[in-house]
Length: 178
Image 1 (cartoon, rainbow, N blue to C red):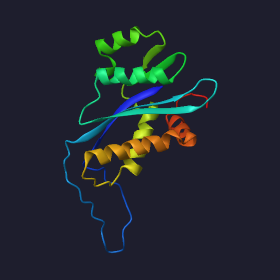
Image 2 (cartoon, rainbow, N blue to C red):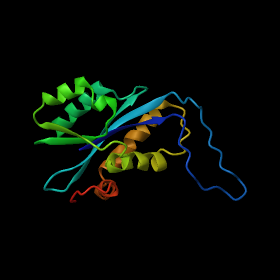
Image 3 (tube, one colour):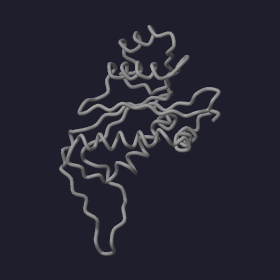
């Protein structure tokens, strides 16, 4: 399972869009830029079966710290059988003493670090980009709960698209067999 964290602000990511000739599209929003939806997600492949999986959790107005990562991993272990290898970046919460001790107490769970400054190797980064540049771009929402619903809807839709999940893994240029 490849794991990463991301955040979506109430101030929307502005992407190119179409408009009527001579009428520039205007995106109105309440720039409550400090409100956010933090997300932790995992994209993985089942060995032998080649089935891709996506898991995610959202948090309102809170960053994903080592405690939230441990809770996510606990939920992940409930859904997956056998040994689980987690591959993630080198942010402090992934290398904290608390999380290392927590992982050491779970014999089914193994953690590996990606090389420094290599987000392109993590398939979850492509999931974030897909959401930010398409589903969640230009949203102009007023309510944080609506943003959270959109983030969750994007995750649920993507979870059911094997081709899209495979494309995230292929885009990472990792030597994985699908």
